[in-house]
Amino acid sequence: MKAPSSPIRLQVMWDRLLSVVEEQAQTLVRTAFGASTREAGDLSAGVFLPDGRMLAQAVTGTPGHVNSMADAVRHFLAEFPADTMQPGDVFATNDPWKGTGHLNDFTFVTPVHRHGRLVALFASTLHVVDIGGLGSGPDATEIFHEGLYVPIVRFADRGILDPTLLRVIRANVREPVQVEGDLHALMVCNEIGARRLLAMMDEYRIEALDELGAHIIERSHQAMLNAVRQWPRGTWRSAMTLDGYDHPIELAAALTISDQGVDLDFSGTSAAVARGINVPKNYTDAYSSFGVRCIIGPEIPNNAGSLGVVRVAAPANCILNAQPPFAVQSRAIVGTMLPDLVFGCLRQVRPEHVPAEGASNLWNIRLAGGQPLPGTDPAEFMRSRRFTIVSFTSGGTGARPGKDGLSATSFPSGVKNTAVEIIETMAPLVFWRKEFTCDSGGAGRLRGGLGQTVEVAHADGAPMVLGATFERIEHPARGAEGGRSGGAGRAYLASGRPLRGKGRQLVPAGDRVILHTPGGGGIGDPAQRPREQVDADVLDGLVSTDAARAVYRLE
Image 1 (cartoon, rainbow, N blue to C red):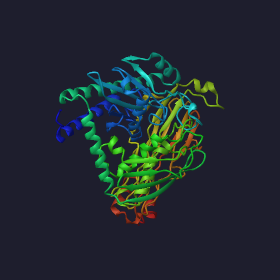
Image 2: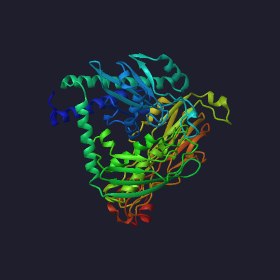
Image 3: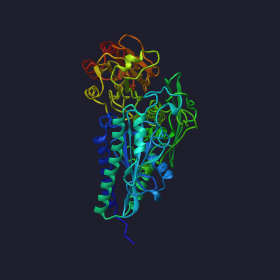
Image 4: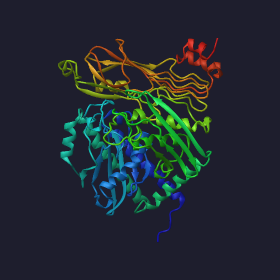
């Protein structure tokens, strides 16, 4: 019998495995066609044991993708058992409930064989710019309106691509070149991960990942349990009101800390609605567990071991556990609010460790041209260039323990902004303004991060469609410990007409879209903010002189 590897050797191989999945992710960034992946990093990449447990994830990516993908591979194995997978096979789906939450996200899984034996599975996910249906936005009332639904299928059979599947996908999307290019990028990045893993196994002369996998999962699980046990035992509750689509949405959470881990229960949350703001349970798991991990055990690697310490429950068909056929296209509107809801519980335990609420919801600018709306002149639209773009746009984070909030920063999603110069090369758009919004950061001893003002128009003066997915207009980010709320978001046209926070809306020819993204909440009494910091904020244009006098009480 082979002697067990030393802890040092296992740690070295663990570090090497992390570098493998990071190269997998960077390959996806370099080869993807869509700006969401190659510019904003809206993706995930990871390696799994043959039984579907995640061993390592790339740092590059978003919690919504990574943490939901952690559970996805077991669905692939249920459809295609491990003993039926062959070298060269590639499997794919965009099933919201078995992938990462909505139809725009494709997940690819690739088996890795060594000497005829399955040793690992690589998985990756990205957001394609279009999947047909109504297009971006929460307007659909059921999943069938939201686009092409691809169940778990064999994308390649022993190295041979399925041409019929690709033809079906191309025929159903508005940007076929971008979408097909992204699917090939998913396949390639998994292949690179497989090559690097096999090279690593050759170098360390191992035939399987069983010993390394057990080491990673057991050490991570125990480390996360130890981190949880440093916190008091008990149950704490928090609630949050969101703008919703047609009416406000109530989120409720009960967080219990015990020796066995952290349990989250979302009983009392509003029911699912007939709009695409519902959240599949996998996406709820992803962002609520991320909220816990931001505060408890943030330094512990993310894998099946550490993730298993946080358990999530939500009643069936509440808005956080919507079942088919509920529409879920804009599940991120509600899902990205969950860390703030979790923070509301943890703040009651140790407020010195927890930030205030932030904008959280991304104010992504989703614009489309060449797509007529009812009640408009179709010829006017069809004369203009067809395009579909998403420009990632963020507000401010809440004030942090001991620090001000971050301005125009996409927390908790972590996606990067796409440079306006790149968007302007991809679509006939002009960004006229992009700047911090003065006074949008919640006042406090620690100030919330600022939102931003963005102004964009069609370069040729043609009409276009805005798919709005905006939150924090009626219910801005709340401050903590006497801190003020962040500035509310606002959306309107340059002509003066207000825009709804959600749904597809016409931008008339020659008009401009103007957005003021929300700011983060502050922490502590604003009167306790040091004068020199307020003076610096005024000098930098972050706080107005009027606010300095009225809110921070400076003479």
